[in-house]
Length: 589
Image 1 (spheres, rainbow, N blue to C red):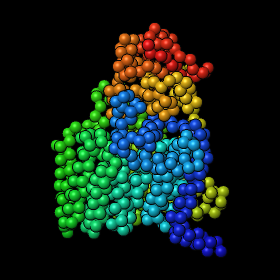
Image 2: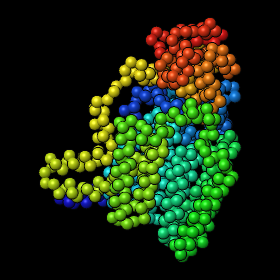
Image 3: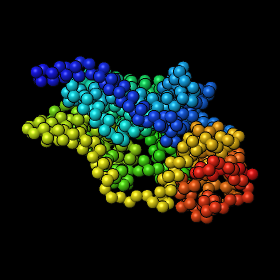
Image 4: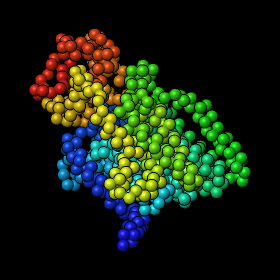
């Protein structure tokens, strides 16, 4: 009876797996909306990019052009360009219009921002389930979903209010992995090509993964000439999808030869790469050595052409000044290698990718299939990316899911041999939790560690308090003005108030960022001149906010450091705010 019930369950999970994945997604979405209701209610967009994404959606819905992605509420009246595309704006705007049928515009925005990040999770879950089905067993895909939910860095990108593009790019990466191991060659090639093209049209963050996926497909063709149809379809969908994405979504500013988005620079690379790979697949020589030689020549043509035609893109794609790179970009924590982060931060990030790599390598060795070999290579590449930047953790953890699932599936028979349920059950739970890093994170949490105190504690508290909706909306008591404030406070200020700001943490806004830094770190005369030049009539500061610590550390005795010690120049008039507000507001005379 038990075996018959188990067979029926396995058959149901196999035959109707898409239905059950979507049912699971609905349940997960409902839980996240309930769990994060406080953030939804207060429109708590914690990240600067999430705030700016909402401003882009608002501007478009208020009549700004589809191809005009300038943010005119920042550094007015000229504004500055955002290097994003409208792809991610579409579902947010659609949800806002839908919820407006039932509620107020303000609540429609909040509900849309809560639900929008969970939508790409459905794509990710379907792609992960498909990958597990193809590589391990048709009915074991729920294990992959459980592991995905335990990937803490990955799941943060799908939380309500995390409306920026990261979740969508992770979804396209999951589709790419599913395509790499798809036994149907043409369908698999199309999935990889379209997944890469959509991701690149959203942003270049996943460019290294897209390049690695193309390299893996090329290697598959080199090894097995029967993979030519997969490579040909991939080449057509990559080149054609990138061209379509550029035509439909590239902003007016992205027609320039810039290196930070899908501009003519990267469009030419994807189109030429697609054309060359399609030509290789059509030629398809019988000799493996000949195929390898053609692949090397094609790679050399792409790399050499890029280096000779676009030498400006051989350095950092942001193309910022050395001063801005030194004072800002080099200090972004997530852009630093994982080994430069504290152990209690780095270890939970790295455990799952490393164990996933071990599992994928073992599965590739035992099963000797091209699909597992492709996944193992991709997982190894993701682990290497962590050694470049810690921001690769969400992708690395997600890519580790198949390998971790395979390792658990290999070890389960050993656990099942134990007769005592008192041993079996805890070991099964441990098999799932230990590889995800959740156990390590829990242990590290309770180990003795230096807790922030004194000034450090004040910085943490101020950073959280200053961006609260209930705090910033009190500035609306004053007529609309251009406010000179911290770079990291700018996007949140324009979302929650009717005021404009000078700068936000975006590299195309580099001159304005430097102006803010020079004003706070310079002398009184320099600060006043910069504020006047930008037309600012209000100065807003939040003492002890994290960004302010840089100004005090870099320029003791500078303009901000003196204000932090209680000095106020005679051309600034303090303006009242509610008692207990962490903000300080001044009129610039």
